[in-house]
Length: 157
Image (cartoon, rainbow, N blue to C red; front, side, top):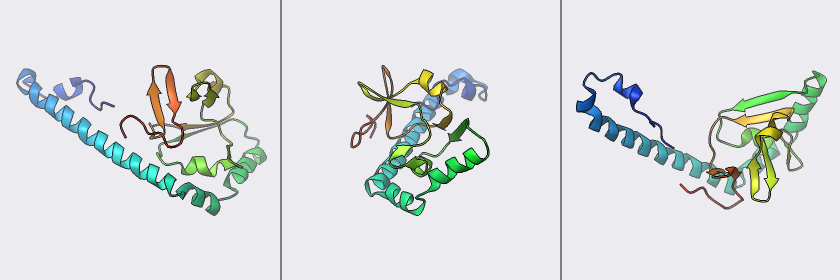
C-alpha cells in the first residue's frame, strides 16, 4: 500500500520543486511507513478480538438481528439493498449472519483456490454488503482477491 504513489499533489505547493524533491521523497517514505505500521497494529487488534471469540459474544447479544433486519426489508417490500461499510471490524457481518450463513452477499465464492471475489456474480446479488477498505482477512494475488483461510495471515502481518 502506498499512500503517496505520486508526488504531483505535493509538488504543486512547492515553488522550487527540484530543490525540495529529496525532502518530499523522504516525507513520502516516512508517511507510508507510519501508515503501514498503524494498519498492521489495527489489523492485529482485530485478529486478536476474533481469536478471543469477540464476535461470538456480539452474536449472543444480538442473536436475531439478521432475521429482524430481513423481516423489516420484507415488510417494506425492499428486495434490493446495497450497504456500504467503512468499518474494518466484523460487527455488521456478524449480526447479518443466521445459522452460520451470511444473509447478504459480499461477492466472495468458493473456488478451487479458496474464497475468491467474483464481480459478475456479485452484480446479480440482491442483498449486498460492500466494505470500502482492505482487511486483514483478504489478500490480493495475481489471480484476484482471496479471502484467507482461518489462521493464515497476510504477507504484511
